Structures are given as structure tokens and as C-alpha cells.
Image (cartoon, rainbow, N blue to C red; front, side, top):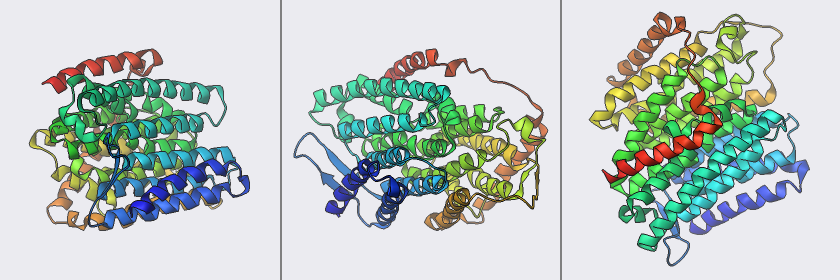
Length: 477
């Protein structure tokens, strides 16, 4: 299995680079690599024992593949296949599929890494590929958003690299386990880089504009997959260095509340989805032991929602209330929203139950508030007007992508059938009913526009500095 893993990782990058030379089969090669990841992810989820592969005899450079890696890899593969299906007949050039495949391989590499220096290389590749995908429209707006993303990403990774140097200086190892004996400032710097890269708490406020202004399939990839590359290492740290568990959980709770707080008031569809990505990443971090399954379901849902939001006649919820949408689009939206809200029969229900069962007592109230906020946010989609249109036709690529993602939400129930117990079902339904009631009685009537000053380019690095200061004292305590 070690040899298969190495070949799989290398082959993804190799195919990614040669796609540009073979434009007539670009989509098929990209699909081939994504299907390869699909098979590999399933194998790792079902594997009895984790796989460890030391790449160097010293320095702590190694790979670690277990069930949690399998969930994240499966998520990456399915969302990538859906994005390719969506773009299949849209005229995307070989350049697009090249960057998509390279980024797919780099994200998978993050899910395999167990050392800080390999992680740095993989994250930097993701940053470059994401920048090229964001700017692929070649408009002034997309180029500015891409450059803004690249600047924030590179600044964050500079902090991270300094932290890695301090860890190596103290332990002569790049292994994640070296964090157990690392200086306070090293942990603070590494966490700042990953929190920013993953869109966590206030360090992630670059995310709404970037995800909202990108091309529809790029938004689906960024929100469904790419941000998980910054979150996964934090979860892995907790598995290997138990002392970091309280810090990661605290950021999970804060992120869940911050994201949903913005989402319930947001009037732009894509920005609302982007803020909710921040919130859902908080759920991933709040219960690290079950992060894989929650990340899997969130990736499916968020990719589907971004693809569907791109088909709506407007991005403004106020305007959408006056324009009935085609019934097939509405049905697909309702299924995705029901899953992320935690309603039964969809995998989001099991994922949310699993997270709630793995919370510590001090997290419970805040995370239940975030769960109610999720139901409030997505009520804005569920209760939009709709109508049957005899002349409406689903685009083939969109239909294939949505069918794949929503089928995944149904089939993924098999990973946690224990969620369907008499005690869990009423709790989930009550949470959603409370959220919908709050939407109709309160939030539907409120027109509050939250300030965007903290999202401005000039503020983002300043926020990083404040977070770094806070991290230093939190780690010290």
C-alpha cells in the first residue's frame, strides 16, 4: 500500500502538468485522477489500520493515512468530479483543468502529510493554483480578488514558515509531534498561518469576498474543498498532541458563532454561503475526533449550494423573493439546505449528531446556538417562491454535478446509521423548527447591513497581528 500511495500522489501531479499538452482529452484526464482519489479514499475509510510512511530517515518527514484522511480525500474527489461535470461542456480550456488537477493533488497531499515542511510545500502549491483559478475569468475584478487572496495567503504562510523554523530549532524535527515540545511563539505562528489559510475566525474574513466573487465552479471548489486544507492540519495536531485540543476547540466555537452571526443577516446569496463556510469550519474544529465525517458532508452540501446559487436570477435575497425560481432548482436547494440544517434522511443529520455527541460541556450551548443559526440562515433559501416552468431544462453538466453531490448526501448515511435513534430525531427536528420560527418571527423582518470594514484589504494583515498576539497569550496560558 505504501508504493500505491506514493505512485498515486506523484501521478496526480504528473497528469496535472501534461493535461496542458493534451487539450483534446483534458477533461477526461482530470476525471481519471479524481476517480482514482475516490477509490483511494474509500479504501482508507474501510482500512483496519492507519498507514505510516517515513520519507526520510531523519527530520521527521513522513506521511500518515488513516480513516480521517480517507473522509477528506473522498470529499475532495467527489467535489472535484462534480466541478468537472459542471464544466464539461462549458468551453473551459486545458489551463483550467491543469490548475484544477494540480490543486486536487496538492489538497490530497495535505491530507497525507504528518510533517510541517511537506505541509508548507503542499499549501503553497494550493495557493498558487487557487490564485490562477480565481483569476481565470481575466476580468479586473477577478484579478484584484485573486491578488488579494494571494497576498493574504503568502503573508500567512510566511508566519507559518517562521514558526516551522523555530520548531525545528528546538527539536531537530519537522514532525507534527514536535509541537509537543515547541516554543510558545512557534505554535502561535504556525496556528496563525493555518487559521488564516483555513478561513478560521477573524483571520478568515478574506474568505467571503474571495468565494463570492469567483466563478461558480471555482467557488464550489474553494468552499467545498480548499479551505479544508488549512483546517485538516489543526485537527491532525490534536490527534497527535493532546495539549492543543482546548485551543483548537475554542477556535471552533468562536468560528461557528462568528460565521453564522454574519450569515443570518447577509442579503447576498453567495456571501451568505461564504460566511456559512466559515461557520461550518467551526463545527469541524469543535469536535476534532469526528472532523472527517463532518467535513465530508459539508463539502458535498456547500459545493451543491454554490453551483445552484449560480443558476439563480439574482444574488440579492430581496429580489429573489419577487422572482419565482424553477421548481427543480428549488427542490435541489431544499435537499442541500435540509442536510446542512441537520434534518434526518441526509448525511448532514448524522454529521451534526456526531459532532454534538463529541463536544465538551462548555461547548454545548454555543454550538447549539450555531446550529439554530444554521437553520435560520438556510430558511432564506427554503422559503423562496418557486413555480413549474414547462420550458425549463436543467443543463446537463449542472444536473450531473448536483445529482452526484445530493446522492452522496444520501449514501453517506451509511457511515453513521447509529444517529437514527429515538433520542436524536426529536432534537434535530426541534432545532430546525426553532430556527425556522425565529426566521419568520424575527430575522425575516430585520434589515441590518453589517459593516464590511474588517474585510477590507487594509485591515486583513492588521487582524492577523491581533490574532497572533492573542494566540501567543492563549498558548502561554
